[in-house]
Image (cartoon, rainbow, N blue to C red; front, side, top):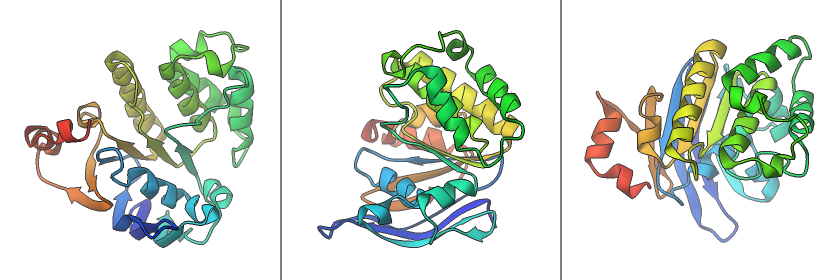
Length: 243
């Protein structure tokens, strides 16, 4: 059994439109899986279903989610987070009205244990030296898009997760910033041995990091297998369709 598993997940909104149709995926510890698809394919609905947000928004969700063999399908988002899941959404990933230090204090409060907090904080900052050089009292709303993403990932790491889900990590960022972000996520994957799930439109940005690849189209998820999966998707024009 994989560390994170989602089985036959379906999402249907109140007007009857199905956003996800029986999707199943798995991610091992120390592994990065990526869900690729165009805007509106159902990627965010899937990851929010895994985190448990949708039932609390009146959205019909079916399927099973397990973390380390424990079924968390009936747990609230807060209780799911306590099992070690951290989620970085596409938007509203930080508290823009608070400064950097205040944001990190809030993230630290989400830890399951305070043991090792200072060590994890130092390790998180090592991943993003540019963030550590910024004034701690700088309002988060004044940070660039890349700096905000760094802050969000740093905050998630301070929470000491076993599973990290990141929605659209490359969206709206300059190519050099995307490269830095993916490099940092690769180091995080190696050093933390966590299960990493990325949801992205950018095929090329994830090709050196993803060990398991899924594509999503109109709510249908497909596990892509075979050698050089990313290269094949790019050859097939998938990068154009998903950009």
